[in-house]
Length: 219
Image (cartoon, rainbow, N blue to C red; front, side):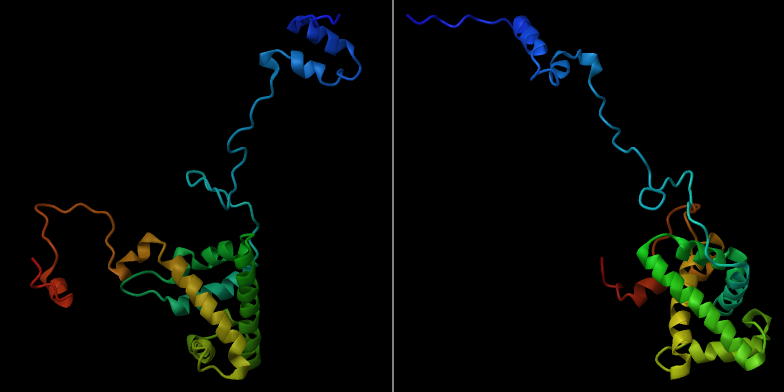
């Protein structure tokens, strides 16, 4: 006659498992107290200065690549592209060369490629300057500088021997303009007045702008 299996309490089962060699590795996990469980990792254990920046406390963990002499050349060229006038300061006055230095120094693939173009172009510019006038670019007279810049300012018209310089100038000009117009001192040249209050009632859209857009008949 078969016997019915005896019921085994949870307490006895745990004792049995704890005493068996096969279960010795898993027994502590079974009988662990609730307060001994491993805590979940934080949602954001670290912040990336590049991909998750803290704009309240900006950090730039990369070293700048441009040397002092390269910055001098960059400042001279930037001032030719964006000189001081009635609408704004010169590029060097608002730190355009420092902006370019920070940009191309960032450890990002695209920026590293631009770093090679900018640094190689600055070297080409001084080599060309020595070839023509036996001086560094920033030591030349404005007229001498313009002679070189005129040969590289348009890649579609540049001579084959100036092709490298023209490609460099295209990238340098783009970065210079980007950095220049991020500074509030340059906004006047864009006609941007910023977030300012208007005294009295709202004057509405100027009539000349409505005419320019052809919206005179729009209700």
